[in-house]
Amino acid sequence: MAVTEPAVDLADIERAARTLDGLVRETPMLPAGEISRRVGSRVWLKAENLQLTGSFKPRGASNRISGLAPAELAAGVVAASAGNHAQGLAFAARRLGAQATVCMPAGAPLAKIAAVRQYGAEVRLIDGSYDEAQDAARELARSQGMTLVPAFDDPDVVAGQGTVGLEVARQAPGTRLIVVPLGGGGLATGIAIAAKARLPGVRVIGVQADACAPYPASIAAHRPIGARSANTICDGIAIKRPGDFTLPLVERFVDDVVTVSEDQAAQAMVLLLERSKVVVEGAGAVAVAALVQGLVEAPGEGDVCAVLSGGNVDASLLAECIRLGETAAGRRIVLATVVPDRPGALAGLLRVVAEHGANVVDVEHLRDGVDLHVRETAIQLVLQTMGPEHDAEVLAAVEAEGFSTGVEVAGG
Image (cartoon, rainbow, N blue to C red; front, side, top):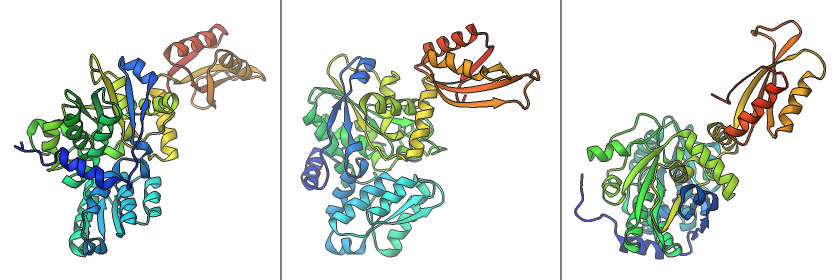
């Protein structure tokens, strides 16, 4: 699949920037000291998690709706979304005077469903994934005469998302590498088109989640090929099939596509929370994950921009991602041992753990199904530590006190 002329160009994106002036926020570029140290280049974080509605999506939705005639606005707009595009559309529709209806997968995060309703849109929950929701949205547009606003597969949407690239070029003109989450492709291609027109020599790398990564196969085949699964903490980029419009743009303007695991995405979420003090969802963290895991080679000179595409994450899911990220980094372990069944024995074990700086998350007594002396008790501790070296230190200290131990990664 190839195109002779780009379906979206710099002029379209510049026009979108003028349209969006006053409708969306210019988000900051945040320095990332610890990430820069790990990567070996100066890294900036393009904080679209601080955009209105918590993601980049109002850019494309607002640009698309702004071009509708009054009669089209009156008929309403409809879209399919796992959450962020739904919020962006609902927000844009309310600002521009249209009623929005959004078809969302029934398993979409509760916080995103609630936010869409708070922006005034009608939510229809659809069994299945994004693809089933998209089919429902298309049917609703056909039967009700609404305007379908695609999440990514539309030139006006791509142009709107491309305004992120204009901001990157203006805010950090020394950027030579941009790493961006890749779901449907609207954000990655829009940024690539704008940035490559403004920043000579810049490379743009798209990042997908291992669990739902249709682009590598689709690029190789030059046609959209669906992925098998969309079960991932990176739900914001869990698009099982590339768009017919965006795939040729990805092939032409995005230099490479890499994938990250669930553990790597979760670790990046924890890193951003702890060291950069920003909250991002799984999809928003994949660019940082790819950088710190060495999946993307930093340029020999010039700056790096990692796009944080969104920050809309349920508190419960955030807690689980923190646990997953700590586990993947070796900072959460399960320590099992046997103590005498007498007063003070457990306190002695906990004292050793505390003296060596580990945090006890959970304590469990195991008496059933374990081969124990009648006066013994098995204890299982879940510990937070500073990493593998600290794990070994705590384990050695416990053994030095006479406790026999077994240890494994929590959740492993």
